[in-house]
Length: 138
Image 1 (cartoon, rainbow, N blue to C red):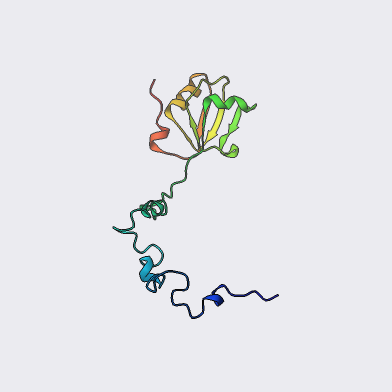
Image 2: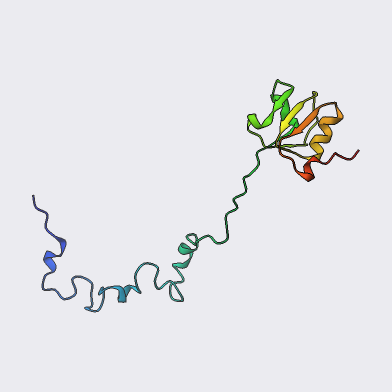
């Protein structure tokens, strides 16, 4: 069955159901196309554009370090730990060590190194950094 076009019944009718002949002519009637006209007159439209704003600035290319605290070392059964293999980049000093750990890690905070060494453990840093390799003050 062939479908009839909706405007068939409006042939010969000047306004085609839009009232005055002037109305519904094109972009001039609707204030432009797309986001045009969203300036002074289009205040009602503006909030919908705000969320689509382009982001400014830059994206940092620095890799975020995955960290672990001393308090979380208990979940590993071993005393000799290679935290790099476990997926951690930096050891932080929150918590108290329960065992004499021997830890290999890329980075460690001063506080973490001091706590591990205070109970007789050892921290080996894989990345040599002046600030991080300084001996902790006693």
